Image 1: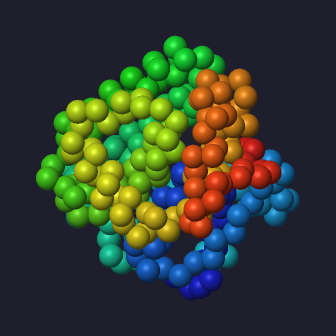
Image 2: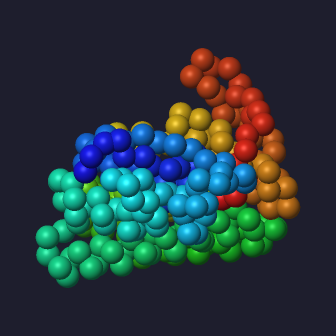
Length: 244
């Protein structure tokens, strides 16, 4: 692959994070170019059939869909992050899809209109995490060594860092293996560096914009609990996070 590779991005998109993590794990140099999904530029719409991020611009080609991008990267750059065994590789791909389903459930959680709906989604999230608990081994990652399935779940777990500042939803109660996996991913440099230092701030702002949602009402009084590195109260300024 020749450089520069450009990862077309959005600051909060978990699917972008997957691609950024895989690029980082493989040591592939790339430029990250954010687009405003509420006001998509013409060049982006010409190249992206779906109008969604991520998109990878490489060697004159525009690749879209995070799974396709990650598979391309694994086929063209070392180290390989998928298992060599075909059956294990298929299992990993299936759990990647499971991770995408969890992102949909997380969206239902933060969009729930009332407490009843939000708590129902929280229980569903715990049930999904319990399914993961049943298949995890001894760690530290999904199947021992770091793989693309881990790149999928790093962004999934990142949401809970903000949710848990608002209330105790019991997402990880009784799930020691998943909790340990979450902690290992949070400590991984490629996962940490897949978002900007302002990620938690931007996610909270995104939640607050969803005024009809129960989580937004819960979050209204929580902004002051986010501290910046200087120790001052974090002020949520105007941010454009529409279009997720």
